[in-house]
Image (cartoon, rainbow, N blue to C red; front, top):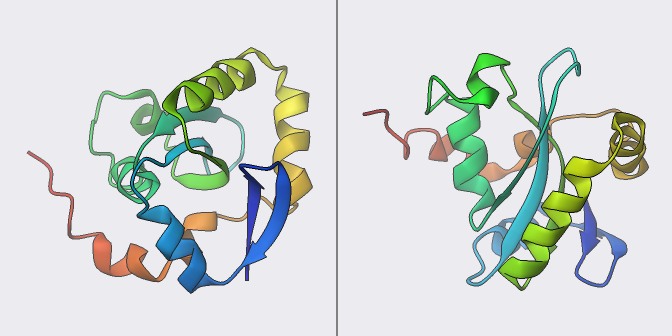
Length: 134
């Protein structure tokens, strides 16, 4: 089971991998997510319309000069789902203004061990070959 944080209604729900994988490919769905490095010393907050693709790009260091590549931010530790891009962008901006302690508390509420949530996606392993560096 995967704990998916704050699905639209703000309620935490347990979902199977099959259900989660289906949600990851919905049209008009936007995600706010938090990545960290293996030592959990740096946090990155982003917004995307394709969480699977974006996490793969971070893990593969798709853009060598990016912040996430420089600091090896390869662990997805938190994400939220939105129907409207404006809501997702507003939430991203809100989280970016938060103190680190608040962000850590938010992550720990749903992912106490700060495990990499993307490791539980079945398509992740087969999808690694989908994104090629230029």
